[in-house]
Length: 494
Image (cartoon, rainbow, N blue to C red; front, side, top):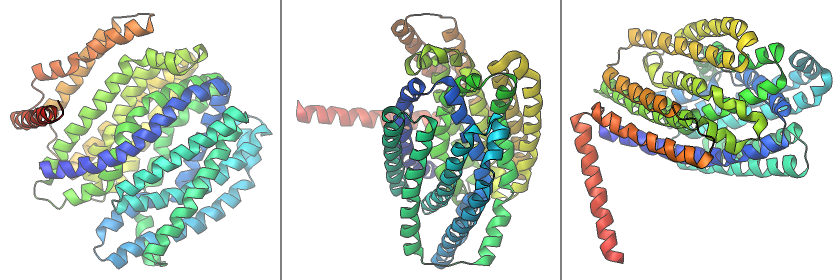
């Protein structure tokens, strides 16, 4: 069991290191953006990004997920190469036609989303960036399917460094605002996309198999309504805030959401890059269900640990990275962190649905949660503004996670370690409640006190006997080995 977890952990660590470095750089760029972009500009950028997200679902047609599934499904290298080549060729042609069609409606998008046609040029730039991103994404998915984690990570870091450099140039030096960020996206995605197309197609050879494409579309298309419902769950509250509040409130809420999304960036994104393909390898093993359960516990532990840190330090984080006009954002971070944990837990809760290939069930619960989210947005946002949006998001994601869990267990029952997960959640709640008792204006003093409180987390887990005997023994042995190596090195150099 430990060998499989070790393999998963190794690739996750490689992916995660690249993502962490890239997102860490992006995170430290937030002060630049919040100082050069007003809350209103930040809100405009958020609405543009969200519109791009939902359009991208129709550009890719679920073929990212289908690539991962069918690349591992076939054993013959010729079939694997045909899967890759077919997807890339199809996306390149289809996305180009789709984006050309969208250009004619730039003014319509601007009018309906912002209530004015002044933003038409921004939508035109957005559509160009979507074309390059769709090609880029299908190519990087190929690298994930091939488990080329080091190469993928190197490209990701290169992309982030280039994007950040261009953002500094366009936003800070040329002061182009939102338009400058779109220029940066187009250049970065375009360069990387063309490089990957040439590199991958030269390796797998040109091949287009319509029969493979039909199979993959059949597998991937059910993800579209799921993704649309997920869009509603994640992002529809921004449109409600524009209607019932202001674009400035969208900017403040978007910053809080970005902080909460650190969980996705640091944990779920790198984990899914490996898990999306590796779960099907585990399916072939005799102890697959036990492996799924143990991995789920470790995954929830890391989610909870990062989430607890963000909740405890919410006010301090906002104070450091943004001017006072954004300070209100810290109040909704705990609710949004809870939402992210509900959302990302689905990565392991839906395992039964995916291994049984019953993906048509996913849109059902996600759609139900999306309907609930719209209702709650109508009910809560006019009165409670960004706090209402955060509450609606948390409730909706819980409904989605619980529903997917029930269906997945019905299809393929996994003996999750419920007792350990409960102890984990209980310990996190205790730590957060203790930290909430302290309201200190001094940034340095607050950081010291909250750090001391966070150190109690492993102690509480130990008291609750979170680790079973086998894992405790394994951990102690590893610590002894580490201690022995440290002593040896100390004697060598001193």
